[in-house]
Image (cartoon, rainbow, N blue to C red; front, side, top):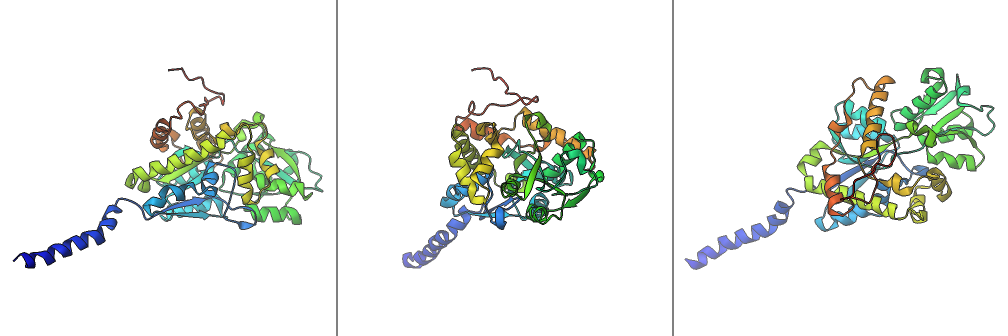
Length: 361
């Protein structure tokens, strides 16, 4: 009788050993899919300029989830924000960096996303013209062929800048071009001007283009912002994994911020994107890298998004508005900052864009 019972129990034990790991992973994803709205120079799958890029370049997420056997899948999309929204719409991505306008368009259109942290905000906007152009002012772009990457946060910034100089998008011959195509069109003279990012500075350095306009502290209303976004489905299904992802992003932002007095290591890391060290340094200008790296969803960040939601509606880019506070999900960020002891590390900013004094405890 004893011998007859041993075999069934042995089979049960073997079954548990075989199925055990799978059962343990039933509440964990096998892969975490992250999309990025852009590519590096030459279509390379590497970009620089913010904490999400640093997290990717340093392999921090891969290291965080290695022990769990969870694969990290990065997708860099030449189609930028609109392409990322398409992935969200088809359930093909879990997280992404996403510029303010495309994320606003997506959420207004029904995409079930949540904003988890700031990343890559206070971004500059530039306007370039061919080096031989006679255009000396933004106002002179009336009737000109101008490249604008539509559906990205550059489109909203461009609308504001044009308005400052008495123009609407309908006053120019706006041509929708991605960054690589617009850079080529600038070099061949197929466009009269282009709104662009840091990548365009190299065209000026090569003598191909001339910088016509760039944002500055006086044009803070034209800054472009971006946030780290996740799907409600993943967040609700895997809250602990979401928190670990946010923690990894915060640690990337902390590493950047620690280099504030000497940003060279950060710029050097980002050059793997194909953008030069000098161009990253120029783009930062006199701004503090620590301020630019802050992941905080503070009053400034919140007010900027609420303003851009209203502006997107005013410029006819979305049909309905909503409150940023109802969209944001800062609890993971707040918990992580508390656990890491970083409550007083980054200075929160008020709606006026000035540092907010926090009472000492």
